[in-house]
Image (cartoon, helix red, strand yellow):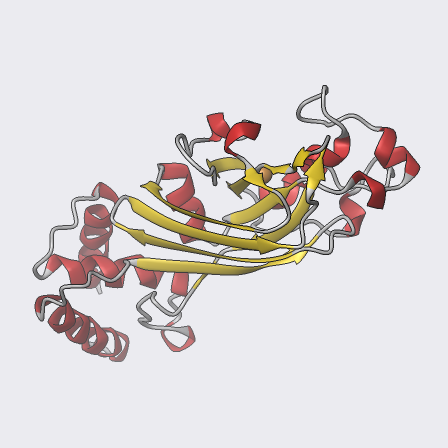
Length: 257
Ligand SMILES: [Cu+2]
């Protein structure tokens, strides 16, 4: 066993013992979190956590200070996990058409397309992405959902490219050109209705089991799933094909070393 493998073996065994000790409160395999940043002159704030256990995700999104009303009703804020791009929130330079508003489309090179809709009820797939009936309502609210996480979202979380975007601006805060423009997503709506107000990249949090690190030359992104699969393999069933394949790959890498 070379030095690198010894380093890896210790935490792996320790994690296996933890898994076998049978804590009744099953901890999430992976936990992600973000403090949301303001976009497009919004004065809102927010936090989001996403805990993934097997194929289940538990997302808690808390926001405040968003646009409160739209046509005398609570303002509907569509909100999503985006993914598959750079995992980045857009800089002001993303406003390519110069209307003073970074539209959802203009921000997409940074955060990608919708992979999960953080709806208030029902469908959490991208198909529900523009359904105002299940959008967040008003200036401040909490959305607490548990749902089956799809492959695109899981991949984005693990790759660090998952970005939470809360849409919907107060038109009064926009430039004249921005106020007059139509939404790039739903042309019957004003641009303000669908443009990003809050944005944050989901980062692996404290719940993620740390193995390796800079010293071993193994990045956190690849070490995390491996550790989880190995720990759970001791007693709990991790049915995910992804986890299984990962362990097999890692073992063949070891036997080759
Ligand atoms: Cu979105």
